[in-house]
Every structure is written in C-alpha cells, then in structure tokens.
Image 1 (tube, helix red, strand yellow):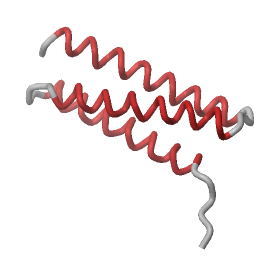
Image 2 (cartoon, rainbow, N blue to C red):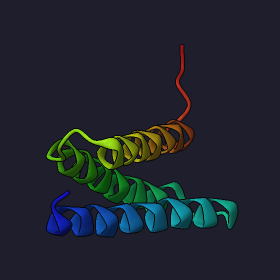
Image 3 (cartoon, rainbow, N blue to C red):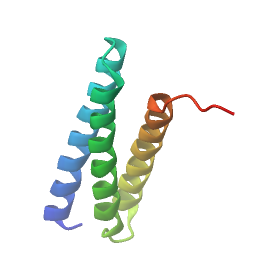
Length: 90
C-alpha cells in the first residue's frame, strides 16, 4: 500500500471522526441548526474526499478494511444529515 495515500486516508478519517463527534456534542448541547448544518456540510466534504482516496487503493485486505470504514462513516453522516433536516410536511 502506498504510504502517502495511507497517511492521507488516516488524516481525512481522523478529521471526519472529529467532525462527527463535534456534531454530536454540539447537538447534545443544544446548538442551533445553522451551526450544526455548517459542520454537516464540512463532514460531507470530508466523507467525499475520503471516498475518493479509498477508491485509489489497490485491492488487498487492508484496502478492503479502509473501504468498509469509509462506508461506515458515510452512513453515520447520512443518519446525522437526516436528523438535522427540517421536518417534512405532507
């Protein structure tokens, strides 16, 4: 595995995890939707960047683990995005 790419992926993953944690903490503390929406937007950009980076990996066991981690974090973000969305009116 390319060490530079692995380092880039680890850095993006850490930033995304920190952002997701920050969203959770601020939401629990009652932060306004506008502030959390900014964090969610930032997290989405990180998740997309992470996905692009793991897509560049070769096919091996380590790469598969990183792909799963990226998918898990993207799914976690999707849940947060839905929670942050304004209620739908029918």
